[in-house]
Image (tube, rainbow, N blue to C red; front, side, top):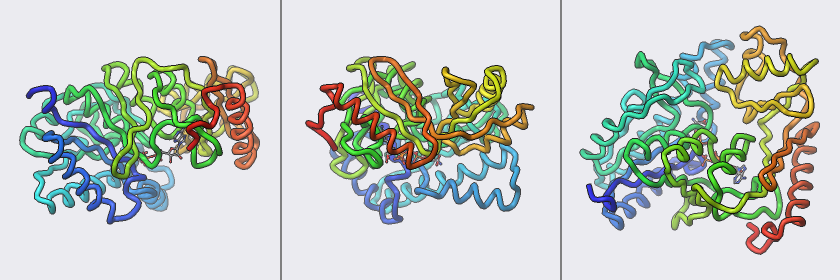
Length: 367
Ligand SMILES: Nc1ncnc2c1ncn2[C@@H]1O[C@H](COP(=O)(O)OP(=O)(O)O)[C@@H](O)[C@H]1O
Ligand SMILES: N[C@@H](CC(=O)OP(=O)(O)O)C(=O)O
């Protein structure tokens, strides 16, 4: 296949599917993209907003302590529904579309079921499917372990599936569409005066997402870096304006990270905090060991922190607030706010300070 006829790899997150009508609209846009570019498409999709958590609640009603295998088997269904709907909408327009679910993608992980680590990306299944179909739709977050059992790459992991798809297909770029145009200097839905960052280096994007910036999954950034895949962040509505490009270079980013699902846990002493940190990491849960005290920040929530700690024989830490991170001149500082309103106020204040000190943050292109 000549390079310019290689399939395009595009991802549409849950925010792209706010209503059932969104599938037909997106199918029309993708149909036009195929016609315009003459290229086939690998489309990675996420569940409709809230669907994954609805399934989690239903599972917990039946069993408040489900095994990892049940969580992986159940929660990934939400993304499968999304993929099937998009493929059906494309077929209605006459496009040859198929769906590759977890055991068909060629993605193999560790056997931790939830937050499983991606170990192998076999290129053949996706390449074969794209030789036979104009569009291959992949539900994000799904894979199998070495024994072929379904595993889950974790919360918000469709970005990781998108980059893995690009790697499998030898694509040089992966387009990630969302309800924002790209990475901002802070969450534009919560903080005033944020600035869209045009170009962000892999390391900075990974630091921001590791501290909880929801727009991109941090393991996706690292996988892209490892394989030299450029990530193009785009808006999820036509004309799909490109916002941020993530690649090897870029000015050092100044940003504030706010994620109200993250929590800071406090421990009696540093050794206890170290043990808790190791326990979370062993389960693949994103945590930060904070340097200024016996504290651990659990990033992004979506995990029964108490249960994880008890299972590893660790006395659970005391939730003591919300982390807010400042990234400036290659340094990061994590602050703790007591409650949600205080965290938003703190993030706004820190962002205003950054904007004052950084000419690049003056609101010339504030969004
Ligand atoms: N620094 C940031 N830049 C842009 N968006 C951010 C940032 N931090 C948090 N966000 C949030 O990330 C959201 C997009 O991520 P997500 O909800 O996972 O989208 P999708 O469902 O499309 O994958 C935005 O709506 C925004 O509120
Ligand atoms: N089922 C996944 C879907 C996902 O990755 O979401 P998004 O791409 O919208 O962040 C989840 O909710 O975690």
